Image (cartoon, rainbow, N blue to C red; front, side):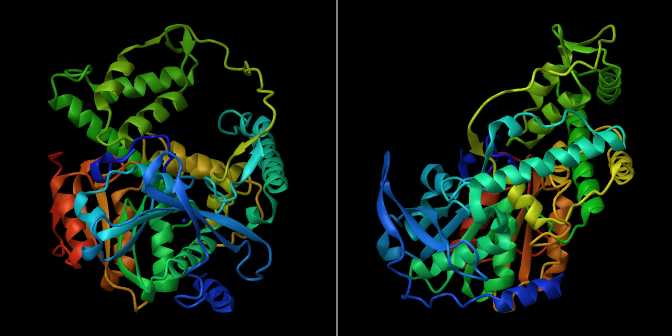
Length: 490
């Protein structure tokens, strides 16, 4: 899970969740075409500005349970550079939700060993990118309620806002809005496999793309040759545990930042009590007495700025330390001023809420429940306080219908699937290491965890991790259990 405009670590640093009910729904879905029947379904064309790739569209049902209306799935393919050594296709997804698999396939610098053996194929998941993107009014997207609700009245205002936004997005996006969940995405992915004429696929998913991979392995495990999941989501977690573990991962990254400053003379805060300074800055911001130049700075501003720095690969710790030194404590200012609302017209892509709120049954019912959740976050993260991205995602579902399309459940990999390679950084503030451990516990016989000892959102970027992934994808060789890669960036 990650906003796509932020940098992440991956190969050569290319460039931002009831089993019985789910099982019954899957059994009720119509059968997909067998290999060959859909091989002519993709209309290929040269990709604009990229002579080494093909782009195309694949018509698919908006609603797999009642096929009728269709949308066009956008696809990009870079063929294997050595056809004589070609193994098959490697489907890729960068996460988000909101990341473009098409852009990942076109722009990413995958290792030569993979490019010569695999067709690199990316697709924009339904509702994202060019695949019938979910669109909403800019006026609403740009003007959410500011700050965390402080009472029931403000909570009800948040409920009204998200209900209005949801109805607006449905109006502008059509029926696909109600079918943007990951269970539908994995149906699309298997239809793409069939359209490519492949009996089995290889898959690489990063961040939210790991949820796509996990659920594909549940539903279509027999169609997998190999699968790498980097920076793992844990779809078994209910709302409180999801928020608390996410906050704890940010707290861990903050402590790593403090440790780095203590041992690194070039840190702008070296020699100071960094954690004490951090707490004082947040306290001043809470009082409305913190400034950058003459502009007020909120506690949310500081936490979000740090979260972004910790999430980068490698983390932007030097820049964060320098920025913290520019903040000054002064006289309290009025915190009641509301910035002028944006009156922008038109629509803009905004599929993130549609995906998350249909994949996760995170429905906070009232201010009392929200307050209890915030207290639990603070107990797990007394200095970092929260995961700003996870809190925003959970709050985006306030006011949504009670039941999600794809509610949380423990991972149950299809017994016909191969062993899946999980990878995770030990100090990842976005998809914490505890999530990867829990996913591995849920499917011990079907997963192998490759631990990267470093920091940031993404495990695959060093020689050790790249070699381990390449050996697995090409030769099927898994790293030994309980082994990992050091934090070295070389």
